[in-house]
Amino acid sequence: MLLDLLQSSYFSVFLIVALGFMLGRIKIAGLSLDVSAVIFIALAFGHWGVSIPKELGNFGLVLFIFTIGIQAGPGFFSSFRSKGKTLILITLLIIASACLTGVGLKYWLKIDTPSIVGLIAGSLTSTPGLAVAIDSTQSPLASIAYGIAYPFGVIGVILFVKLLPKLLKVNLEEEARHLEQERRNKFPELSTCLFKVSNPLIFGHTLMQLNVRAVTGAIISRIKQGENIIIPKAHTVIQEGDYIQAVGSEESLKTLTTLLGSREEGKLPLSDNQSLESLLLTKKDIIGKQLRELNLQRNFGCTVTRVRRSGIDLSPSANLELKFGDKLMVVGEKEGIQGVANLIGNDAKKLSDTDFFPIATGIILGVLFGKLNISFGGNISFSPGLTGGILMMALFLSAIGKTGPIIWTMTGHSIQLLRQLGLLLFLAEVGTSAGTTLIATFQESGFILFGIGAAITIVPMVLATLVGRLVFKISLLDLLGTITGGMTSTPGLAAADSMTDSNIPGVAYATVYPIAMVFLILFIQLIAMMA
Image 1 (cartoon, rainbow, N blue to C red):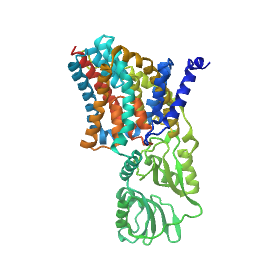
Image 2: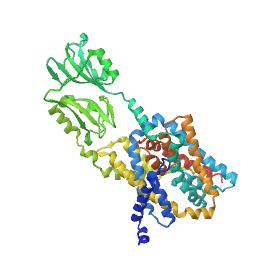
Image 3: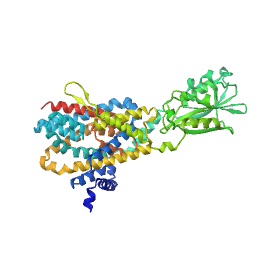
Image 4: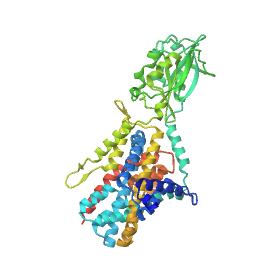
């Protein structure tokens, strides 16, 4: 009965996943495999004759890569601008050292060219690389060599990623917190301050004439004139002795002090018909608009004092582009605030909903983009492939954020669920597929080709680590993403992803993966021409 059940792919998948999670929770010297253990269980099942349909693995791969791109997209281009050159140089080092290691061993051990290009593609677990190797050499030896190198290409990167933090004695969670703090420091902390107007130069001027927001960067939230507390409007006239409450960075509040007069202790209370509320932006029509376009002061008599996004308080400048899920801190009369809430949505339920239309549409576009064949002249061409096409399309769509009524974003819970599901399906299929030929390839081809493949896998990662940490001094989270992206290793990224809640490895992976894929294809074609 058990043998019959094992022939059922859905039973085998969940059995592999369950056993993988059990194995992954075992810690030895403080090290555990976590979700990566699934692939080791899958290798054993594959050796025993259990198979998972390739399409099921591709389905999982599509979900995993698409969610990586969707999550990494918003930070991809800023990361590319700030760290792109460094990460690309490390990626080129990975690809070049892998190819040079292969070519060097080819001449030293007198290995045929088809086998070497197959070993390079297998060691970097690159299916597009294998396709180019077969097309360039027209030899079955490339496929055999790929099969020999592929298992260690998968397992070697996973083990390297898992062991590296221990070897370098780096706590990934502490490093993630440090990098998050650095990111926050780029956005000045906002605080609230009370001022007393004593500068005679501004007596009798309206807020429009003073242009406080543009001049100082601070936002006036309310004003006390005599015994009345009012919500500021453009035509509000500033008088001597007025008390003004404002929100801004320390620098902007210092500038405002010079303009108004002096700082005071305390805060201005709200009157019975006034309120300060945090409102969620969940309406599609508002996403992508600048704050000035909403004209909240004129339409509702309300002022936005700050915008909270991804745990960071942003100053509500007039040209701030609004994103889905932004929290707007709004002050005004209760009726006006209700109007703002209706305008921007303020529907917390939508944050937990999953709209599958953009997911399906984005994946369709990614698959189609992956089919494109880009020619560089002569016999050299490049196709993004399934993984590259979906990743690049997801990055692009996520960075855009919105197209008409379609929102190209997903909630954090949806991303985590689909990513984990996709990853488990992918690892189960990849492992059983590699396990089928693992013993046979050793018996047929011996250990020489396997050793060459292992060297092609290990040498680039060691060099990347040395150069990344000693020369460029980049964070280990960035380095893990760069190594897995440079090695075009999705299972390796999965291992890094399971070790931290930070999305920094995913962003680095997405930054370098397309570049690694292009250069690996070009290098394989060049090596094939050497035959």
